[in-house]
Length: 324
Image (tube, rainbow, N blue to C red; front, side, top):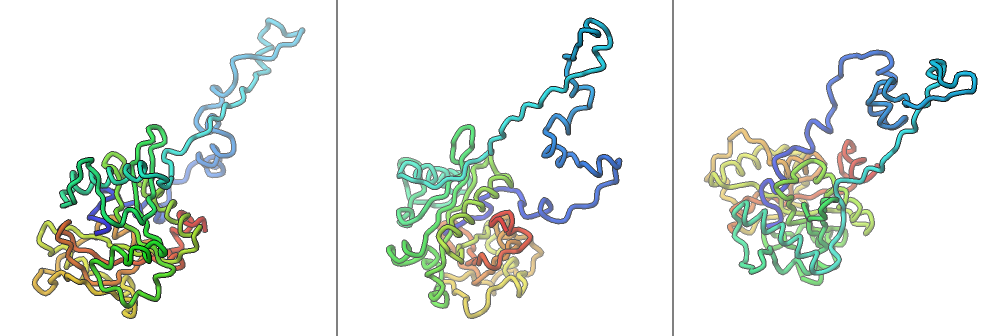
């Protein structure tokens, strides 16, 4: 299984923060001409956040004629604001050695096994390890202050998929109809964020790192298993799949077929449900669902094969991830 339900935490990065915001009440003409954020950019933080009387320096200019008199107060000196370079909260890096890969594997184990109860292979070091890790590139998001790895994705590029002989998704789906796409397709998996860092800033960093990777290597398609929890026996998963619109499904010619399909006909598929944040985010970006749900017994999830083409990213979000 590539992703498990809600591995990025209880937030909706693709929700109201990037939608059209309601109009604010009209302020003064000056505020309209110089909004606070714009003022900060143009004139520095002091200008935008402090009144004029606090901006003026305590020191004054004195001339021989005014020395020691109140006239000197007519010539206040304005202090130059001290601009501190604001460091980004998170670092976007890629693992360059086994030790850094272990940092990602340790976070994955903490989230998947300890927090979410997945059945993973026993490991004395508390790592989530499988045979695909050695062939993948591992994206790491670090806290800038502590340098702790707080978010990760693993990426299997096409030439490494050839070396290992398959994608992870091949273990859950018949991907025959996607074979012609493999040369330009990378597989994403094992995405997770530390419980203390589940915010829009982290998912933004993860997606920025992935976008840079795709552009650098001239890849076009991202593929992965997006998962739905099955704590209720699968009714939620069946209802979510049934609620997908036609425009959220991939064309039939690139559909995949579950090797262990979820028995939709035996489940209540008519519930009103909301997609988990990760799947909701993928769909808003422009991703397409390529399959009916497959059952992953190790994680007790229903997995949907999900595909995102860079050329089909929703223009509303393209500038955030591709700089367009």
